[in-house]
Image 1: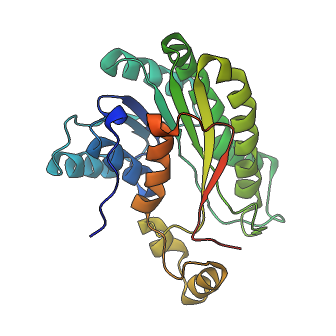
Image 2: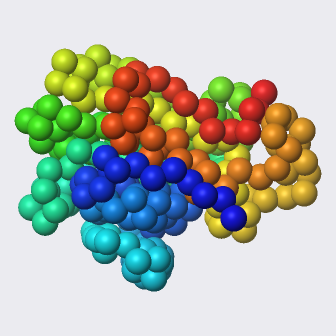
Length: 256
């Protein structure tokens, strides 16, 4: 059984995770809860959210995570949820922008409405979540914003252009906001997963040929799991990562 690091600075720290009900997001919620953080998360899947909370409680989390049902394409609802979390749990000093949807599509079938939907689902809410939490971080002179990107655009994967293009924009948000908030000791970084074996990926997108191709491209010849990805995020959220900002960190098994 793998034994992961414990970060004392994350104890009682207020953390907000977007898209925390499933996949990588669920692993993030559970891993932060295991560190003793006060975790809130937003998502649209209430059933999965209840399961995440139950797992955290079963694992003996010091603070039961708080869930808010939010459609992240609704900016007003997202920012209202942030306000509620701050009122319930105190100033948010860690934000993990994670929520995304990698629905497959081709460039030929793209419409203007679907283009807008892909950017709204995979990029726009990152900025507006930051806009809502940043004043508290600036006041505290402490904060860590971790944006979850994707290696898909770097790998030139072409089966979801709207998603890949949106994810390339995450790095623009990271580098711009890192410069903006640096004087106030607020750090902004991107963590990019490669192919992570989430329940959705295995149930919806997995194929023997696809996995074989991925493992051939990786230096580490095995699946990468959500809990492993979460460890880089924990490091950047903790004081241990205090000198890291405006950076990309790949968690992809050494994929080429």
